[in-house]
Image 1 (tube, rainbow, N blue to C red):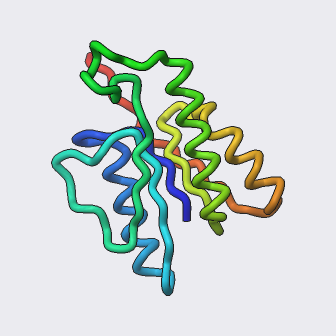
Image 2: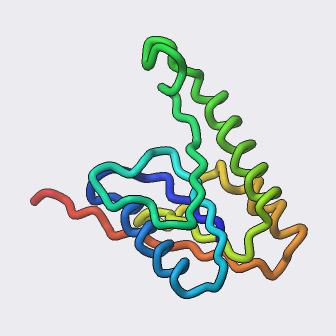
Image 3: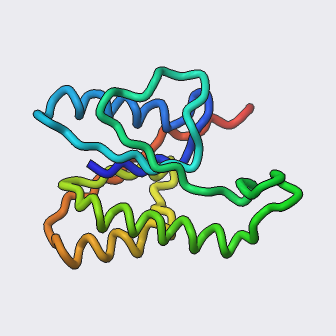
Length: 137
């Protein structure tokens, strides 16, 4: 399974996705799971055993922090290339995407999905809808 969860932090979708990953690891004999994320989990459970994590760069990941921030277009291209390369090398049996409440798939995923579909047209791609964010009344 290739699991794309680009949201992190307390109460985030990443915690839910790690729970899904743990259930997957329990249910599938000899599972392989790669988690693609832009943020490490914070104040949550440890990563389930059997999960490999690929951390995607963010605009402030350059040496020296925000003062040496990378241009956004460069970060987007780098992230898309990393995602596509991981997907190509891993060749998952299923892709799970945490899309958030709007149901939109991040553009950085599209090249990887297109390439995976070329080689495996029936590859299941599951797009999960996150919990809607409650607005303050």
